[in-house]
Image 1 (cartoon, helix red, strand yellow):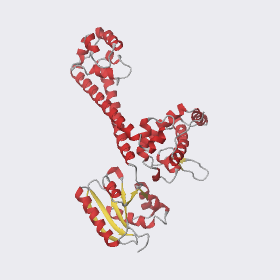
Image 2 (cartoon, rainbow, N blue to C red):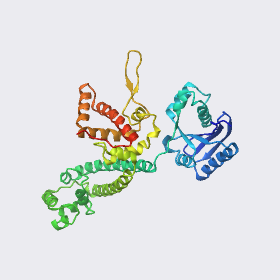
Image 3 (spheres, rainbow, N blue to C red):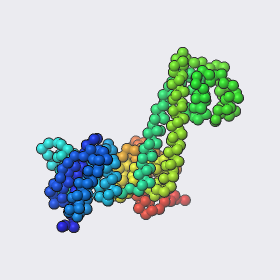
Image 4 (cartoon, helix red, strand yellow):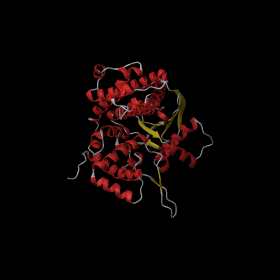
Length: 397
């Protein structure tokens, strides 16, 4: 048996059913079958693999798509079994199939193409790029990824409801909206939700106002000044309940986000990636946690240039003849890019040298986002060295 012998498994992922092909490193197909995305289907999947592994006595390598998350939780179970896991890059797989076209497009053909890629990955660069081995990721970073994505969803929902609340208040009672500069102020939201009828807010007495958490003498006086001239549109009879409901939902979201922040801070304290990036000026608790969660581990990347592409801080060369240009990569992690753009902008405000570099790029004719990405490209080099050398960022005196 060759020292490089493997039992190779290809999985074409679907929403309900997954097509599987099992082959040998020599190129032969041992078995082809379909499993359901159910616990029984997963048991059947591993039972068939173990049967061939026991007979051949070789390690197992599994290639599967990760598109839209349908591979979960099968992908994590593969890693728990100690198998090598390869993610199939769908964009590069499409390019590979353009170069080496097949007669048709079916799930069965796709799994055979994956087994073929296993054969060619050591000899053909385009094949090697399609199959990308999944490196083990520290558990704390896996949790950070899930929690920060959840937090982003809640924040986006909060922003949408705040915009709707402002619009409704402007239509129903513009004077009420004018009481605050920020609609998500806790005292204002608690004021909106202290009664079931919006018009009752114009009749609250000073003692009742002071009983609302967050309202002291300053805000009490502001509300008392508004009350004699308070006016409500006729639609308040039915729209008022919607306004109060939205205010309750924003309060609920703020509480959930605060709970998530506590959990994220706890995980960030034990995440090596988060701690190192948190030492960079301007990289706050949320952005460093988002980046640690989305990056997972540096072992996923061949070098700092690969990480820069993933974070959206670098473009691909797109030159032809005398034309020199670049284009954006399709392999950018949009969540990580957004966190990186925010962190770099804040970093620039904290570090004089970084601000000078940004101004230099602007003077060269770069737009704001282009200059931010150029600065971010340099920071990726710094991050890479910090994490590799396991040391914090040191500011110049």
